[in-house]
Amino acid sequence: MSAVIETDALTKLYRGGAGIRDLTLTVDRGEVFGFLGPNGAGKTTTIRTLLDLLHPTSGNATIFGLDTRRCSREIRARVGNLPGDFAYEDRLTGEQLLRLFARLRGTNDLTGARSLAERFKADLNRPLRQLSRGNRQKIGIIQALFHNPELLILDEPTTGLDPLMQEEFLQLIAERREQGTTVFLSSHDLPEVERACDRVGIIRAGRLAAIESVDEMRARAYRKVTLKLREPADPAEFAAIEGVDSLERDGDEITFRALGPLDEVIAAVARHQVADLEITKPSLEELFLLYYDGTAGP
Amino acid sequence: MSATEASGRSRTGVLTAGPPSTWESFRAILASDLHFHRASPLIWGGSLGATCALVAAIWPSVADSIGRAMQGYPDSIKKAFGITTLSNVDQYVDAEMLSLIVPLAMAWFAVRVATRSIVWAEENHHLDSLLALPISRRVLVAGSLLATALLLAASLFLMWAMTLAAATAVDAHASAATLASGFANVWPISIAFAGFGVFLAGFLHRSASVVGIAGGTLVAMYVIDLVGKISPDLKPFRVLSAFRWYGSAVQDGFDWGHAMTLTAAGLLLAVVGAELFRRRDVL
Image 1 (spheres, rainbow over the protein chains, first blue to last red):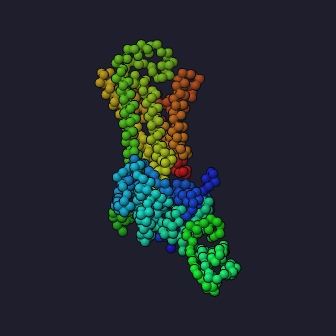
Image 2 (cartoon, each protein chain N blue to C red):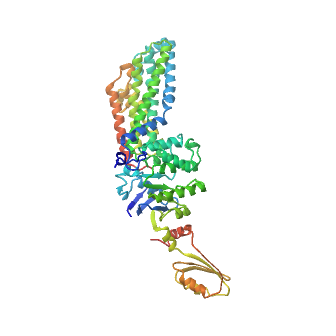
Image 3 (spheres, chains in turn cyan, red):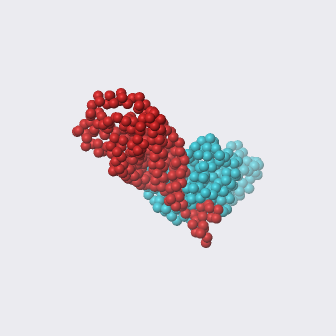
């Protein structure tokens, strides 16, 4: 599988010191790559550096094998971008904006744009200043996707969209993935990333904390075990199992976290009469916190 | 492979690979800038044109008193303001409007229009959308500069037409050619300041800073030229002022050399500004 985006120790420092440092990642052709992090972590700086709006302090990046600085225009012809704060001349209607952007992409064909507008119920006839945040975001999504780009770079794409439109958007991303489009999606909405992405990069304070597939993250994640026994038991029996921590006892209820395979936990539980047993996976949000706590990482 | 596929376009015309030509991008930027500012000639040219027309219209009723007043003015003051004689409506419009108000206003207008698609757009996050499209920053600057030049020309033409119409209406015997050279003479100095604005936008990120510095420089240059005309000691400094090269086309005729110098200076500054803009971050 060939790489569409490759960064090598990509660093962009601002005068204040924030930015991104030594960012090395690869996004393969046809995959949906989630870029997770809280506000200010460096997600938007990374995207703006990839698009040559910011020039790297050191390191380099390539998209489609082309240097993002030297061949930026060639790259941007093949990319659809939705900025985090999509804005343009607000006197323009959606139709006028899309017509202008189409011309700047060297086409007059708005067939794809009209189809997307219908799908997202976007009003193309009103000036942008008369549109709500969500409706402006729809225009932003349409301008990013209407020309069927090979790579989509989307910064917080569902911001402002209502749940129905968020669902429609995720469906659209899934369709584009099926068609072979590569997607680089920045978000702090973990359920969204969980649904849309194949792999996830987690960025913290400008540094990449981890890159894993969503499945891998879940597989190596802890389970939260809540056990209610019919007779008293020594919690030490469970505490002694490798990978178990955070054990607590409250009457006849024992709770703990179990990392790794659950065979030993199940075997230990089976030695008792069980009134109730609940094993839950952590949400992606809880997983996210693990990386920020420093208890997980590459 | 078909011709359309070879050029990176599908049969429906949707771009699949490769940026549009520089010329296509340039035309699109130019057209969009002209569209955004389509009312500007009416607003700027119309309001200044109305003032110029008023000045022309009152000439017959003030001509005698102005003539007498001129005899009382010291020669140094007349020289400072570039008024050697004030004996016809063309010279009156020149003294009242073309010596200060029109060039200041149009140069200010030029700075605002030429830099709007750079720093103002940057401040308002428009460049994040625009520069994610396959256009170069140089083309963006070039398109804006040409749009500025055309809008300036349209505004000045409107001013000339309104002034001439008013003068004709009151039978003031204006010279269309003399007035035309007077208004046309505003174009090069405005282009010079448009270029200066683009130069500033090459390294500044805030619209207020660019417009403020350019506006301050504009006024300072006027003052330098004015004082230099009065004071022999300060006369050498006039060469630093764009107004030294502006002069008065109504009084002295249109100076092609000075007009070319100002236009060339504006273009040179814009080229440097575009290069600085290309090299800098868009914040």
